[in-house]
Length: 403
Image (tube, one colour):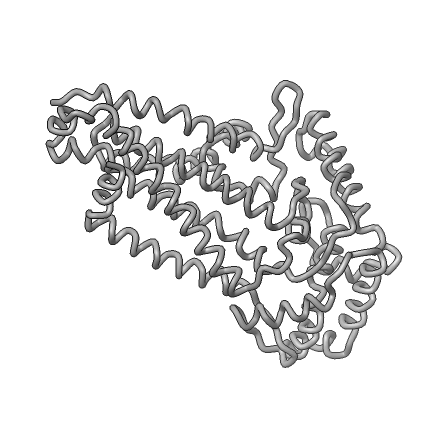
């Protein structure tokens, strides 16, 4: 019966077209992500995409290794030498681009130094030009001291517990960082949330008719009067919805990941996320961040599709059920701009698809005096909600009356 429900979903012309549309979106988003990586050659010419990624990887991996005090000092000296060259100081853009090309290998290290010596909520691209080789030794210490100064400034309202949590996370980060080319993972993490949102909406569309089809086809009397109509047949529908959600999510997320990392390179999976997100409180690697984002996206997609099926069963309308994922994942973000209660908005289901933002920002919640990051709360909470909604869905459809 599960196989029958699966076939029934994809026997519809509109659903087959939707799958083709999803494949087109996969290709387009993959191309856009791949083209985020740029490279400037020795002649000052810009390029992007696969060839640019390969050249940039070769340049950055020349600096591969642990970022010790000596490495930061060397970068400051090398940057100063290039910045003070005649070509860099000229008014000729082409000559400036040629000099910039020489910095690409250690640009990621330069970004760390700039972040360390910039104002807390600012990024000064030229900060490194004012940093001495001696000051460069303080990069890791500056990260912690800048946080403490910002917390003491009163610009943001945190409880003492939250302040202590933030400082603890910063002080617990293992240093020195290991540096190498990470641009493939960086591009993937920055763009995967958008792809997951589109994927979630399409999956919601595919499962929206599973429970309402019998009503709309006026076949509900036949369905419910059959021997297994109010037990195993319902479980088959629920299983089909879960299977479509899981198979499509896992398959397309893995396809997107494979395409991007194949094109841009998977180097740096075990490097700390702070190479890209300097102020993050998550002491995790790029690969761990990817798993966290993918898990959040899956739970968010599962929750939206489950509610879509619930509405489909209760309202007996496919059109109404289709709207549910859109409301949960697209309308809620706009609502959060109106509601001036960030703690409440942090628990909206759309946040499951925005785990990257949570990793990037200070999204905290304090429950019973215990401080936790928001992702560590909403992921298990919504997973539990998905499980609790299954018997509700089963009961609603089982108790449905034939009209």
